[in-house]
Image (tube, rainbow, N blue to C red; front, side, top):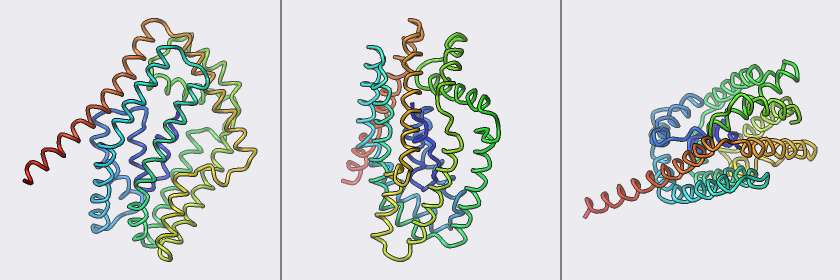
Length: 301
């Protein structure tokens, strides 16, 4: 399932928030620390001034409040629906349904936050943009190393198997040795797009830099271009690469289906409990937000 949206790491301020909201390692604690995490990351990548930091906190707080009250209840229902699908037995289309659901919720978030993100990004100095590029260069070197771009196809297949195993563990339940061996065997049939993904990553970064170059000209145009970059990440991909990606996601979904069908009764119970826990966490956080808002209105009277 999709942890790319999760840690997309385009590091455009409010995209950081999305990384927390839809992360497969979600917890109430992580969500409640989102403002601290996002502020730290934004400063780390852009080296914000004190004025920009204060502006970030204000804008982030507004988006955060909206997300708690308006989006979390829907997230809770989404996870309950996902639980029902796991309980009934997964098919490939249902795994892809989940991936598309995460993507759609990411898009909803960034569309809402785009105006605030654009306003803050418009204040960046040339030195701050250079700081972002240096960070990306460092991240890219790390990406090459961690994804074994200079390694063998077999090494990357092993890495893909470990990645799927980890995702399954985070979302549903740990796997036994036989199931892990099944992942390793099926991972060999997943096309190796490591280099293509890296090229796409760099292309997207360059595209973002071109968008940033418009920040001091036409505010409305800049916001529109930023929104497009955040929401329509497929734009600019080659047709061939998109076809290859579709195959990868279908085969990854097949691995999840195969694993889900191999679950023991204990593993299935753990999976259902974990999905219910996500749903309960979202509902609880939303309830706290509504109660806090009501208390604030009462105190203001």
